[in-house]
Every structure is written in C-alpha cells, then in structure tokens.
Length: 277
Length: 124
Image 1 (tube, rainbow over the protein chains, first blue to last red):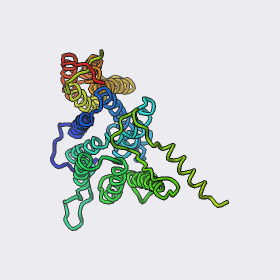
Image 2: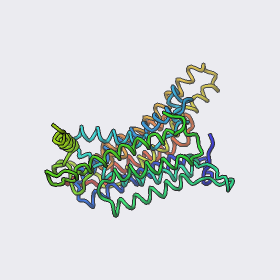
Image 3: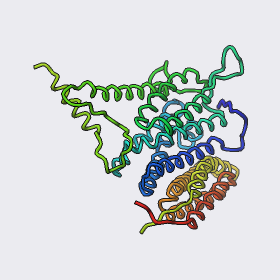
Image 4: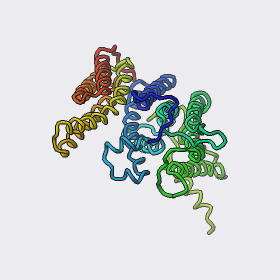
C-alpha cells in the first residue's frame, strides 16, 4: 500500500493513537460545553455513553462500508478488512448519525439537541484524525504537475477546515450546526476528491469516487431540508414559524419542539389548500 | 443516592488503551498464525488459533472502550470492565505482542483509577 507520511514513525500505530486522542478531546469538549449550558451531570454522562457506543458502531460501519468500495475486499474476512479497508470518514459519520438517531429515540433523548451539541466534538475529532492520516501517510493528494514531488495538500486542507469549523461552532454558530456541517463538508469533500491520489475505490459510477457520490447525496439531503424549511416563510395565512431542526436553548424532555412530523403535516396541509378545485 | 466519578483518567486510559490494542489484536492474530506454522501444526489449526487470538483482542478493545466511557457514570462497572479488558489483552501477550503489553498497562491504570477516584453524589 502506497503511503506518504509527513515523517516516518513506523514502529508506532500513530493513526490509531491520534484517533484515540481525538476521541478523548471530543468527549472532553462535549462535557465542557454541557457544563457551560448547565446540563445536568447525569444527562451529560448518558449522552457521553450514547455517543460513545454510536461512535464504536460508526467505526465498524466505516470499515464495513469502505470494504464495499474495493472489489478485492468483497467477501474478505475481518482480519483482511481491518488490515486493508481502513476506516472511511463519510460512511462512519453517516452510520454514527443513524445510530445516534435510533438509540436516542429508544432512550427518549432529544435527538436534535444532542446532535447539535455533538457537532463541535465531531469537527475536532475529524480534524485530529486527519493529523493521524498525515502522520500515517494515508489520504494523500495527487502529485502536482508543475512541482514534481509535491502533493496536493488534501489532508492539510481538511485539518484546517475541521479546526475552523470547530471554532465557528464554539463561538459563532449555535443553531443548525448539522445543516452547516453537512453542506460545507460535502461541498469541500466533493471537490477535494478530484485531487486525491490514493486508491479511491468504486461504488455506483465509474467517473465519480464513492466519497463524491456520498457527498452528492448528503448535499441533496441538506438542500431538500433547507428548501422545505424555507417553504414555511411563504405562508400567508399563518405567522412564520421558523423550523429548527437543531434548536438552541432547549433541554431534552422539557421544551415542546416543532418536530419533523408537525412540519410535514403543516407542509402537506398548505399544499392541499393551494390545490385548484 | 447514586454516586459518579470525578476523574478523567479511566476515560483517557480506556480509550487510548483500546486504540493501541486494536493493532495489537490484528498483530496477535498474525503472530499466532506465525507461531502455529513454526510449531508445524496444520494450517487449519493455525487459522483457528489466529482467529481466536484476534477475537479475544477485539473483545479487549470493546471492553476497554466501554469501560473508559463509563468512567464517570458508573465507576465500579467501569473498573470491572477495564479489568476484564486487562485480562483479555493479557491473553494476547502469549503471542509476544508489544501493543498488547502497552494496552494491558493502560487498562490496568484506568481500572485502578476507576476504583479509587473521588466520587460525588449525582446532581439532577
């Protein structure tokens, strides 16, 4: 397997170590944010366990999905998958979100609030994880034509993006973080994929990489959500009720949310009223 | 009234131990296969031994990780899980595995801290 690390640290499992450090920092940031927002310790502990378990399943999902992208790994055993498939970020992220959603519904947590508060930790974890990629040598860019031996800084761009969006989430963006992250990262990843120099695998099409295909799907989801949430503004017969998928200042089980179901009911109702008789 | 832990050490040791044990588990599988071939056992037995050591190693990863994230919520359970992870990773030491040795030390430190950390009553 071709690797291009920043510098060679062959005897240390540096990627794993950085992922572990990233995860610890992610949890500590989550705990600190929860403390600042006066969320009870009991609730914080439950959330840490929930997101932790979801993260384990997310890692497994990342490994399982990524083995589907490489035809040579289809039907491979666990050992071969762990050795060669790695842990793809986008499949792992999607699995994580789905598992958080399912577990929080079963445990009656406020999914919206939980995901909104988890996003800074995810951004930080992703950023430190990419430092691990750079030190291990994976996820490298193509060699530049005008400057031989210099590669496009795909990993470095993602590190900067992760740090940047983490600070924005901590200081400026407090609502709709999920939408912001989904849209911005999908866009960035879609274009960065053109500059990636490692084996990208194959999924649905021949001309786009699996990550580009997933990015496009995520972009469509965020676009649909954005459009639907703004359809509300066009209503004349009732005052504008802003739809917050990830609202601020709402503690679980206490506040009444304008939920997806209510939102869909209202949207359908509006369309029916607009139909010509 | 239930009590929660105050230390981050079990969390850090559990997670770092788990991520170090992950290559340890893979290595243990490979080492066990290598040792079996040196001992001239049949290839089927060698593969079974390799798989067994790898699954034990992966179980240690899981126990260590879960024990780590439960360090504050439930200190005693966290300590027990981390001790379990120590035992599982310890079995992998049979294959002369350096990563498992580091993981054993980290899990053990995490388990000790989980038991001895200061505890306080949970605020709702």
